[in-house]
Image (cartoon, rainbow, N blue to C red; front, side, top):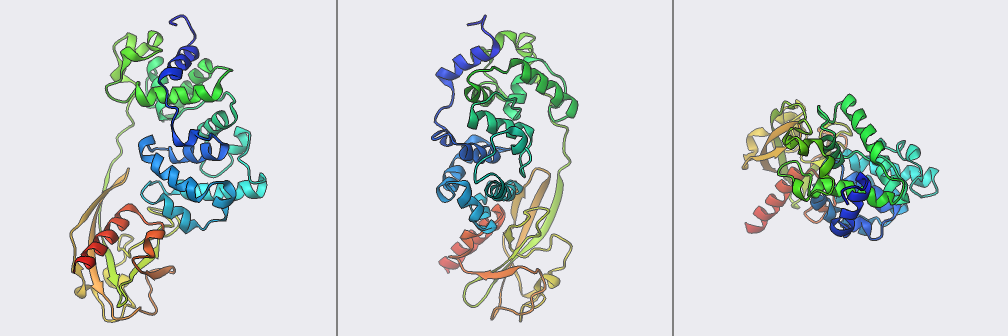
Length: 354
C-alpha cells in the first residue's frame, strides 16, 4: 500500500474507516450536498447534523425552500450562527428556480455565481453531487495538505492558499471523485486533527513532511490573532397585558442581520429612545435581570436585560420600522439570535413559575 499514490492510499483507508452515515449522504442528491456544504462552512459536522435533518424535513427540495419566507428559513437556522449563510441560501434557491429549472447547477462556474458559494464550496458540491474531480480546500483539507507539504504560513493568506491549491491539484484523482473529496475531508476531521493528530494511523504519513520532520504542530500556521472587541449593551424585555413580548427586526447588514431581536441600545440609541412611544414606561420603570455573556468570532458581548410591563400595545413606536408583539407560542417560529432565544426562554420559565 505504501507504494500507491496519495489518493489511492487515502481511498483504501476511507473504504474501511471513512464516514458513510452522514445524513446528507442518504440520499446524496445535489440539493442535499449543497445545503450541507453551506451549513458546514465554519461549523462542525456534529453541530450541523441535527440542523440539517430539521431543515430538509421542512424544505425537502429547492422549490420548497425558494417559496418559503425569509423568517421561516432563519427560524430553522436559529442557533447555527453566521446567518448570512441562510439568507444567501434562500436567495440562491430563488435563482435556481428562476434560472436553472429548479435544479442545482451542474458546473462549478455556475455554482460559484450563486450567493454564498465560493470556488472551493462550488467544487465540493460539484464533486460530491455529480461525481466529478475538483479541488476542494475546506479547513480540514488545508490542514492535511499544509502538513503534507510543510507549507509555511496561514492558509487564509492568498499566497499560501494558492500554493495549497496547486498541491491539491497534483494529488487529485480522476476516478471516484465524490469518495475522494469525502475521504480527504474525513482524514482532516478524524485523524489529521488540529491538536493531537493520530499520525501513526494515517494512511498517507510516509510522504507527510511535517510528520517526517517531527513538525506536525508547526503546520498549518495559526490565523493571525483577531482583536476581540468588548461590547456591553441592554436588551429590553417589554411585556404587554396579553403576555406578548416586543420584538424588532435587525437591519439587513451587521450583527444578526435580518433576524428578530429584543430592542437593544447597541447601535448608540439611549434607553429612552428605545422606549419612546411605550405608554407609561421609561427607563426608570425597568427592572434589571441577570446579565448574559455571548461570544462571536470578533466580539465578546455582555447583554444586560431589562424587564418592563406596558399597559397596552403602544402606538407610534420609533425604535424600528419593523416591530411586532409576539406571544410565547409565536416567537419560537421566528429567526432569533441565540442569546435572544435564551432570554425569551428564561423569561417564559420565570413567568410560568410566578
